[in-house]
Structures are given as C-alpha cells and as structure tokens.
Image (cartoon, rainbow, N blue to C red; front, side):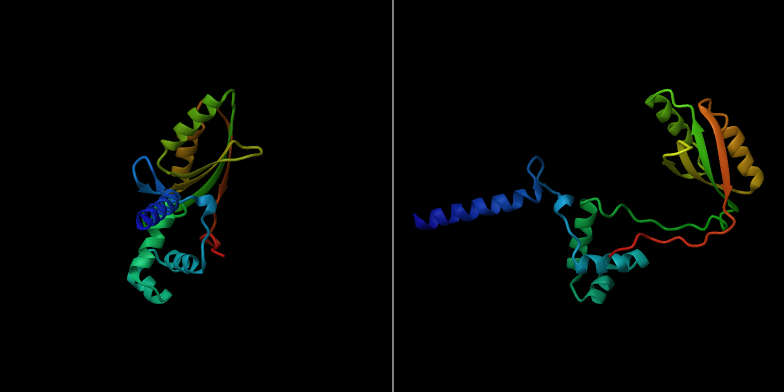
Length: 187
C-alpha cells in the first residue's frame, strides 16, 4: 500500500513537471519563452553558429566541451521557442548582377487598414524588394531594393511602386557602399 501511494505521488509530480514542457492536446514539446533564459552554454552555442551556421553540432560540442546530443537538444529547444528561425546562405547581390542597392521611403494615402494591407501585398509581389518595414514618421514603409543598375531601379520605382494608386510619394536613398552588416549581439 505504501509503495502504491509512493508511485502515485511520483506520477503526479512527474505529470505536473511535464505539463510545463508538453502541450497536452497533441503531446508535443513546447518552450515557454517568457520563462526561457539563455545560459552560458546556450550563448556560446549561438555565438559559434552565428559565425558559421554550417558548423556541425559535433564540432560545436567539441568547442563547448559537451556532447553532440546536448548541442542538438539545446538548438532544438531554441527553434521550438522561436528564438531561432531557419538558417540561410548569404548571396552576393553583385555576383548575381545586382549592382544598385536603394532604400525607399514610401508615403501612402491610408484611408483604412485595408488600404495599408493592399499596398503591402502589392509591394510583396515585387521580387527586387528584399525587405519592407512599416515605420513611423513621414513614410508608411521603408523598403530595401536590389536592382541591376540605376535604369532598372528607375523602372521598379516608376512602374512597380509609384504606379500603386495609394502611393502618394517616394524618396530614394542610394547606398554607395555597405559600411558593415552585423548579426545581433548575444550577451
């Protein structure tokens, strides 16, 4: 009888503990990012992967003095918690034939939230636009455009952006040279 009560008590404690880490609907793990804190090892793993995302987990583990499975579990936890999103290769725009980089402030006649969304959807359809930010101030949007040359940039501005009915004005800032491009610091 005592053994049965002991087992039930352990079961209940384990159930409460696991409920913090598992979604009861489909038994999948999740991380509560409000209570998630990066420890020293997590930060070290992130610094290594930030420098080169292609480093195998075994090498990351060797540099950190832990097992490969420990690195894998921690990275998986960071993906599930939304801290990490995907991985990517950085392409060289110039090697692909894009020699002009511009930032464009776009003024929009916003008559409703629907207008804002309609303009945004039209901007999304322009393949040369690689970033679009909804901002405060004089402009509704700030976009980043890669073009093959200045003539190509003019074509994109006139026929793709300024032709959007709700766009009331644009201001273009040409990038002469990228001073630096850094990843977010991990403290």
